[in-house]
Length: 455
Image 1: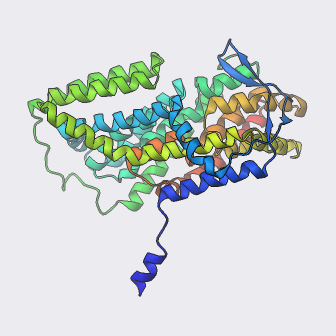
Image 2 (image 1 turned 90 degrees about the horizontal axis):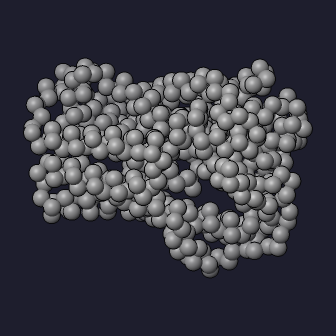
Image 3 (image 1 turned 30 degrees about the vertical axis):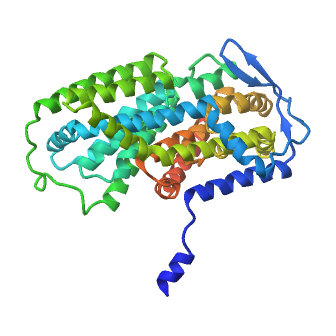
């Protein structure tokens, strides 16, 4: 009887839930008035900017429910969607080859001996390391690219698998949020607000270690609570065997490739295609260095790609949802109405309202540069009218933009990380939701501090 009831109450497949959200987006195009901002292209910063005060109602263009599969196909054909999907497939295939060689497993086994029973301290090291990708170049793609490294390190050191994923993804996001030299959120926002580029960096430098410390502590406490029975100690872990020659060769090739990839992403302004090509070459080169046959490399590569397919499809569905909201001309309306709410708040909490507004709108628009181009032209004159400094308004935007970045189900970065980590959105949000609450409290305190000192 219980098994029969359990089968009747079976949880819907994630694809069904996602398609329900796509259908809801289609229905909202009938219910929400259509509207658009006027946009102009600024060649100096290479951005399409919203003209302040230009919002106007336009003719309704609802997207019929029977067209959602057409929109899914259109979304899959978008260059941004397709490039991310291929990035995930190639990355998954390449790392499957790397893991098959055993070089990372051998390296992590030797690292455990170095930590001497303090494997948890790998977490703040990873968080700090990967925050560099966020606060220097704003590269959230690094979360997807390097998530397999976090998984390999965590599983080999006896940590929770989710701890390794989170250390990489949340490390990048902590750096992105602090945004010391982040060109995609801080850079675009300050340019629109007509502030000197990357001015006021001292407060962002102060924000960075705060976010790293909070993120690291949360992941460490989570791991200690959920994985105490399986974590290995030095006594339980046998002394690492000497690395074999093929492991050394493959590890050397991987390290060289990793350095090239890091330099290219950080300083070479590499795009997805450059990263994809590098990973494709890296996977083959590591396999050959380990002595694998070409057939074995192909088999391992395809196995890795197969494990990524679920997440790749999720990314396509999420892209279709965004496309429907945009084509239905309701995304600007939703943004405009939320922005107007800030002006209704008492003067003492209006800056805080900007922070929470951007934290909420992050669930609809996850791109920092897009959100800056959409919101800052409105927040800038609003800050002037309300007597708030533009620097504080940018800071409130920056924190709101970053702290909830990995909570939105339509975030391509989050979906990429979940695909590689083989996580469901429910499992991720159960882990992440308490940290989001902590983030919002810290973000509110920092925003109040910025306003109080006239930042």
